[in-house]
Image (cartoon, rainbow, N blue to C red; front, side, top):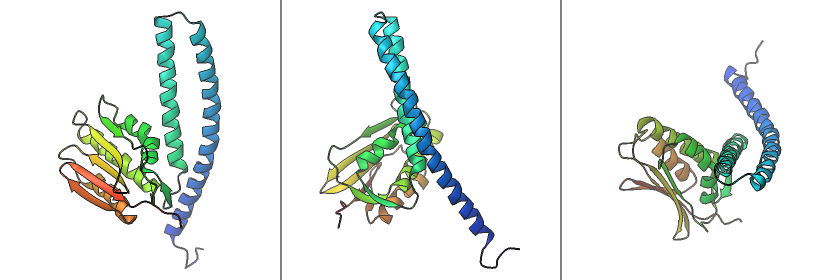
Length: 211
């Protein structure tokens, strides 16, 4: 018999939390295994490249290495996303967050020139919920890919202006608002600002000063 103070929804939430914890723990093991396998692949590729003839053999090995590098980046991004705790705020540079998720954005927006990313060299750390930022960016990329598969590129740029962390998104014209609003909500929840400048959505946060 079910206790009066434990609703069915509570049980579902607990199961979801337990499942997330198990998957996050598994992600660490999977990443370790992938790292070991890629170490073997890259080591053998390097040996083959030293002895392979010029021309087609070297080009073929180069394509294999490029594919392995892309797989490495994509797998790292997916597993880091899985392991990231939801609802937790942490200090992070916007450039670091964007660079980490870029392989997944490229996977979604796979067409030539479909994604443009510009990172800053020295943008300050800001305090925000990184998992929410990642989810909003992935939702935005999926929306662009679904509604405008051959349309204009999605442009993302990080800059440090007036001492703030600043993320500028140039969105395709006519894009529906849900993803834009989700990104704006992430920054506003962290005490930041969101403003529209033409086709661009400009998001900014004051630097995080540990105290």
